[in-house]
Image (cartoon, rainbow, N blue to C red; front, side, top):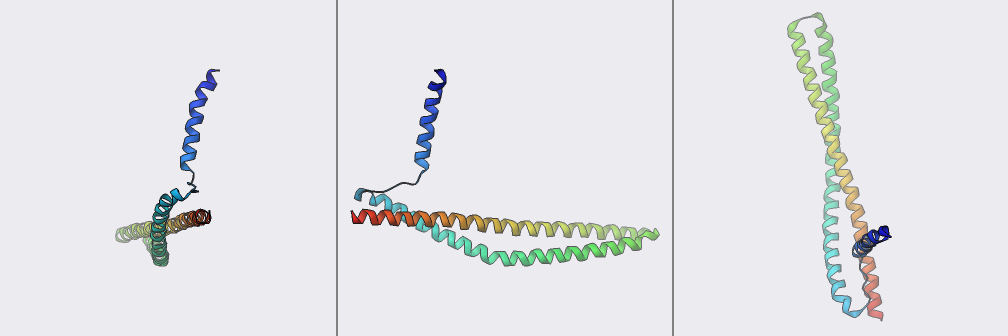
Length: 154
């Protein structure tokens, strides 16, 4: 019996929470003010999302080019480091220090390439998220259009 008493407030809270999270349905002429208000807000958000998507789409090719350039530089630096390391095996201290310096440069270039690839992945993820959000908002706009039509016909 005590379990039921404890579960009742939780069930009421969850039902109120899910009701507040669900999209509103407008059915009467008195609801048109709220419907129009939500419609305007959604339209503004859609326009902003479309702008964000266009910016991300234009940024991605630039980020891809930077990532490719950084990877090429990293490979070149690594090869140069290998060449220097192979000449430093004779034991000459100057060559050893130069090989160590080239190895540090190669490591820095590899980190730069990794960072450039991470920025590219982040931009692609942001684009996918923005497109998904735009689809949700456009679906809600279509739903509001249907509700508006239903109110006007009744």
